[in-house]
Length: 135
Image 1: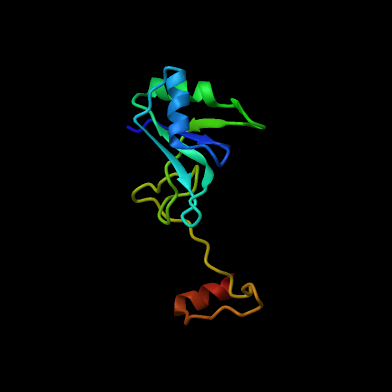
Image 2: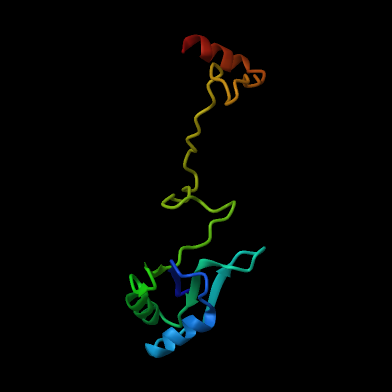
């Protein structure tokens, strides 16, 4: 189980060593600290991830640093969310239940795509044609 804290709204000059010093001054422990940087410029993006050894330590870090003032800003600290990838469901989405029907709405043939191009019509089955007549 991961006990990772998202630490945000950091000034760009903040380094992992700075965060280590802040934690040590408060008698807080972190297994690792990663300040996220722009790949091209190597400048900090203004947030970091702090890996705590326990859930209790994670909560202590959050209580100490959430809304803590630094320069002219308030820091943000909260439990880190899992990374969003191409295959990750959107926040709050429930995974599909095995065997449950998937509700997909077919595209309406009378609608146009953005840019005004007509959708390409695929050949329909005889059943689809009869259904279209009824509806």
